[in-house]
Image (cartoon, rainbow, N blue to C red):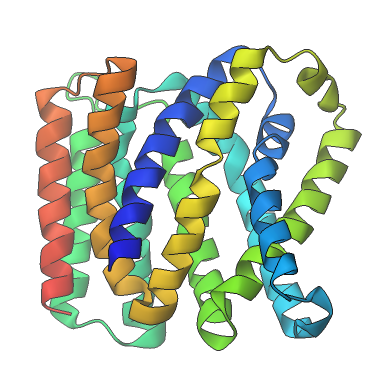
Length: 278
């Protein structure tokens, strides 16, 4: 359980510096490529302990490749949302991926009760209802992008969880680093965004390095999923939301509005209730 709490705090810290690193005008593919430094350090560590890519089952390559492609579709949208919105504004909506996972568990895995599923539908309704501008009756400009990001995130986690449970979190992490790095190098080259990295200021590299600590958080999350499954990881994810709000207030002076706080509390309690009746 200590890994779960440690992952939560590291992820919250990394999220704030991810937000800070988006102000330097680095395009999306180059921006993601710059975060693989920490991933490579983890890969080198596991290779030094005897891990071999040659021993990885072929099926794992195909599945993790699919996860990488899904993540590559999500990353530009997520960057745009983080760049244009305050963390305190988007935090309540980052519960959506957890809600989608609950829904998938109801329809696909059938390990979630009807009560949990109904609570999930109510939660989605509250999130959408709270997003509507009562004067114009329109959703926020980035709501569709947030929705797309969360659907893609939930899809990637559901697929990745199969690899983690079937094989191991170490295989998932290392294969993701290798295939993801190669894929991102190709995308950065063909979009010619690598020029952005050559002219990036030192402050960008500092912020991006601190945000790349999410690799460590991510690996700890894989361990939690491997041993406790997705449900516990999702529950602990709500701690991450509140810690992120705290760090964003301390480091970015991002003060959440009363509406954001109330919405975050309401959605968190509802999803907790959903898992209580699971």
